[in-house]
Length: 350
Image (cartoon, rainbow, N blue to C red; front, side):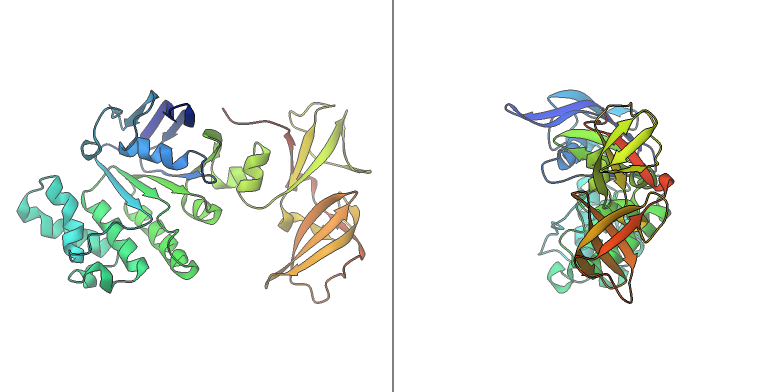
């Protein structure tokens, strides 16, 4: 099957309500692309446009070099896994996995081998004779993935596949999905999630969605370390987003001048300083800021400090402190110039 996905100015609307607005995005063959965003951002609509469950109001959808915009779902050569598994309760595991193969009219003699391969790949070979009700939630999700892989798709669509699992199962399934990706290097995966940990763990690149539009796209490291706008900074990881004044060769945060690369931000422009909490230190150092502790949270391996600096709350995630500062205590926090990013207000990705 052909691999890779391309959205060419794809828009989807229900009446006057635009739920996906002019999406241009390419998923390379063999790439895992995460669509990350809050509810209503357009990410699931984009996936459903690839699957063929919604018809774009404008634009085209390509799988490989095929324009599939007008093709029905069963002719697109895709595998799909949704969060509620959608297994047939009256069928055994092996029958559920075989269902798509029979629908595609695969030769009867070939089906048992394909089913066995898919179950083996997902670690479910020993459960072939069981019914879905005899499986845990994580095992049912593995069967759903095996069913999608059995048809040997060029494109695998995953729509929040782990959201119904508890934290421990989710962590295990993330490891399994990462392993599957290594074993299926030619399959393009489009992974819809609102969970940043899933996106950062699995994706080669992340497309950040909000209000029906693509806001940013890049590798997890790029989006985390050098976000292009405030929405990306706040949604991909946790961030201090602090309003600053930009002068000629200077940046001021409250009454303190800080050193940071101004990049393309011009003097006089409204701007925001982005620095990750784990990169903020306690005590003297570069870009030192004096403030008052307003909250202390113990988080096991770390303490989260909230420090009021000239009316702005600065978060610092510090290794567990033997003696954390008290509420109301005057402290100094600092961050390295290279650990901060200056963002122009209102910048979005088009």
